[in-house]
Amino acid sequence: MYDVVLLTLGSERDAPGAGCGSGGACCGGGAATTDDREERCETPRVPVLACADALTARGARVETVTARSDAEIDQVLARLDGPSRPDGLTWPDADTKTRLVVAVAGDAQLRAVLRRMVRRYAPPPRSPPSRLAGRTVPDLPP
Image (tube, helix red, strand yellow):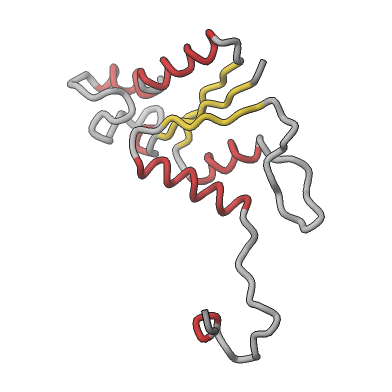
């Protein structure tokens, strides 16, 4: 059995009390009163809920998280971290039984999650030790 964190994205405009504000992207669109929109924006989109139901039916324990900022995406990714490596980098824990499933409405949302993963798990760029003082990286040969 696996624990699954089902990550979906919303905008800060979709936050509770703010109404949908995104043309209905968080709650399926359509005309609704302000009260209806605020209530529905608390709940992820129907496809996300269907995904959660399918995973649960297969025996997974599912937690659905709606991230509305880079900081919230980072908080979800931090849950998957393993112990620090000798080089000081964090890396996802290979022994964990927790899996991340990303449910997004478009390519831009997926890119936002991947961008945060690269920032978290890739080493920062470094200048090669052979670089002369006063030279910049673009000055270096390919």
